[in-house]
Image (cartoon, rainbow, N blue to C red; front, top):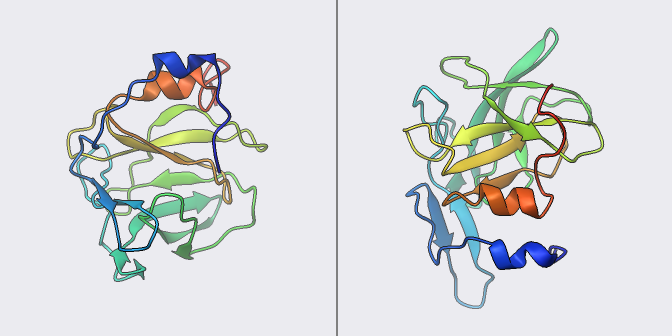
Length: 172
């Protein structure tokens, strides 16, 4: 779906190729191009990709530990950008979650507010073992929210300027 263009297009910072090794641009003959996340890390450096045997179109998924009250379990999400498939533990749409590393159980850090209708928070999953905001996946902590995004090469300002992230005081 094309994004709504605004005057801020002139301040957009773009690179021709993703800088993080965690992002792979996949091209097939007569098929659309898509982006696959090949590695993703918690702030402690645990790789979340391929921990589970679950695959999506031949690509290993991203494992997350999710909790809501006493209900908890592992969820494996597709590593294909824009693919909302997931397997494992399920919750009712709109449920607020604690999203954690399945290995160390550290909760993912808050990036900013999400623009979803349930007032979720975007949580940071790093694309490199060194926890840097230059290369992240921003995932909403509301079950069923489709507004997660990949931010590479410090595109944070462009996302904020276009109104895709931010707004408000950043408190939960």
